[in-house]
Length: 403
Image 1 (cartoon, rainbow, N blue to C red):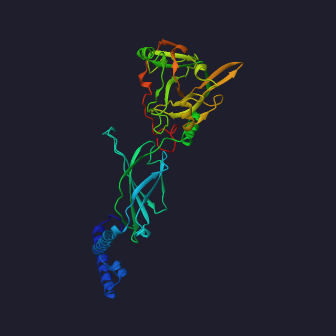
Image 2: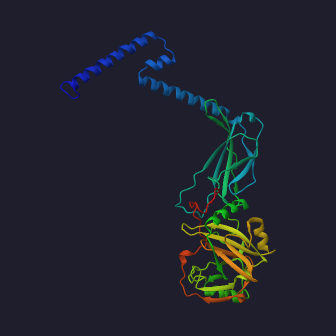
Image 3: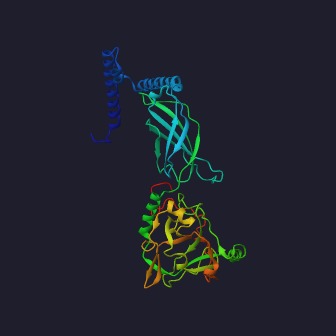
């Protein structure tokens, strides 16, 4: 018979009824053979709803037994106390604690509750950070906690610990939580900054000549320097622009200068985001063999162009000592960003073309060493990097630690 022909629907219905009757008959035979069926017999012959109900009851009984066991034995596991945090880096720390010896041998795991400390000034519309619950096998203390996906540099955290014993059914019996303590992660180390340095070198580009360093500000700034500081610009604490883990942000004192030049003129650009008045000083008065050069940071602000922060410090100065302990030092004659070398008895200077250099000089600078004049270009406020936040998603200028 062709599918869909006369009588097809009727024949299909009769066939379905015969099949169902045969199955019921076969099922009764199985039940007769298994008057007291075991677990396998039940699974083979029980109707589906009965099997589901029996499985549900078994699961509930197992869960209740586990819960009762947990309640009875919870107090037997020692509660961690006197928590100590040590060896803190930008993306790791060591944790240890004291605990009673009672039932100590039953401990199989540690549960660690790690959370970012709430900031009263944080954006209330921003999604809250998801708390991090870490499960670790019981190892000798102190235990190292490491992970750049949940630890960020110079960030405050809270942490609490509980001990746990894994049961044969896979559930855990746990102690009460310890007290909550607070700690703050560290800045980038020299190792991390060297990774940033290597990334910056990749895109630095060819070197162009320069002859001056320059600093743009408003007229009122220079008037204030003359009146209140005896004509000398004073170092100030660097803002929080750039990488969150930079060890110079909020700590290093210096004076900000630029040195990039226009490709077609070899001179500083006439536009600036910082003010219409510019102080220019010959490069050799700030950067020479009596100064050291350090790499400070590499970042971008959700833009295609990138910034490199360099620090120039007179040898032996407080700024030099600060940088020597924290920043990678560069060879002033041979690096990818800013060089100073002598050619035919004359100092010659070059800067990288494809990154914007921000140079921090760590000592006071007298205005009499250069000139102050008004620029003819525009004040491009959109290019300001004051307290600018680094783009954490940029693959060019981020490394595998907290941003």
